[in-house]
Length: 175
Image (cartoon, rainbow, N blue to C red; front, side, top):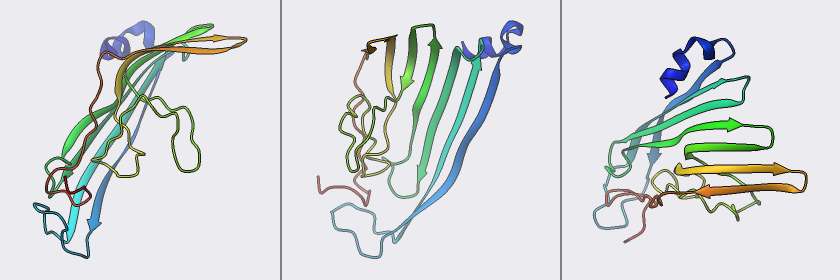
């Protein structure tokens, strides 16, 4: 769908595409030996991270597609080596309603130490132990905006299970 819309002559006149993202080499250094049975005894744990972002909008900004894949290659932990869709969605804005279809992240606010209402997206515990990294959730989000407030309806066809480091992973529990 995205390629068709991007290549159609009618949509190119009032459309724009943005490319961004990052590539990084992460290294974790563990000055002490492993604690749990099965953990890799490596002192240095390098990994490569790739997270491009493609954003395309048309129809004077009323329609857009966002694509944010994520990939990590880890030298020690096979469970940490993975590919995921952080976001892959179509978004449409109308006069007093909007709709988003696809893999998306929902963020409703933050206190100093916890995301108290962060209940839709599952935490990606493979990436970090602080709960900040989230998996994209397959959903349809229909929002209505009125003078008295906003209503959002979510249809989530399935639940994404939380991911965890593997047996070789250093930042894991004993289980």
